[in-house]
Amino acid sequence: GVSEATDTRGVIHSGVQLEVPRLSRAAEKFVSEVYPNPTTGPVSIRLNLPEAGRVSVIVTDATGQQVRSRVDMYLSAGRSELPLSLEGLSNGVYLVHFQYTENKMSIMTRHRVLVTN
Image (cartoon, rainbow, N blue to C red; front, side, top):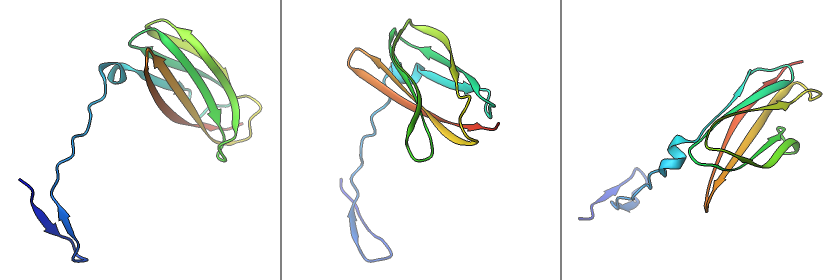
């Protein structure tokens, strides 16, 4: 059944239960990490892919400007470790974006990385 509740502003809300889709099995098993963090420049990217697929890594600065990338790499299922140079970047926080695509499914994650020179 549908229930109704009034909030502090007197607005009536219908009590509709929304289904939240569970992540696919592949999304639950996809793991990404960046280390060391903080870093003085070079980092290693550890990935664990549930299935072979394409991976792109894009690093952006605080303004969203792309400063580094490794795009459209085809990786096997399982663990992979990729080097990525952040040398020459100014001190600050950067976002490392991952996109993993397998068949028609795409998973995106991101990590904050602090660069200190």
